[in-house]
Length: 178
Image (tube, rainbow, N blue to C red; front, side, top):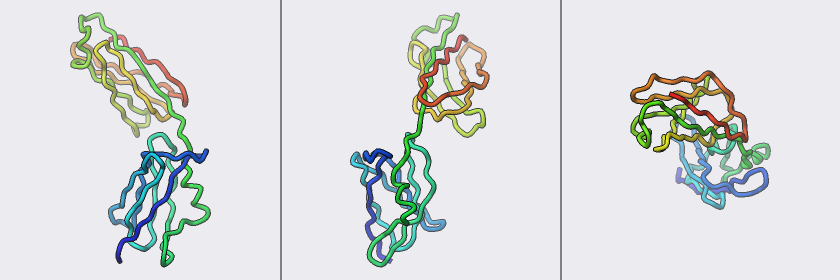
């Protein structure tokens, strides 16, 4: 079948448009057709006229269940109970900043000497943060949960923190003396 155009606008719970939402439409096990919303929350996809599973993704918003769009002969429709899925709920995120310190003379050379990794205790999420010349680092947009901080630095023993909680809306601090 010849592809047809499907378009919509993605908004948050306040009705404000959301840019940067990844829209994946898929039939069975075929590769998905992917689009991204613009700054007005709009996207368009060229789809074959049949039912598609649709998933919306954005790093700052909660994951949404898939929903189905169907072809009704002249347009795509979304089931009434799925229309609310087009309104993404903001994900409460957190950040973690820290400072590496050492008794060795490594001033201003931290970017070449150290790696800072944040790993969720359950092993499902891993993030890396660049280390600035002064030894500071920052993780933003973290999903709340339990994490461990890992640091590898030349001339130092590897560091691993105990598990600690990251709370939504918080800007936590994780200084690391090496």
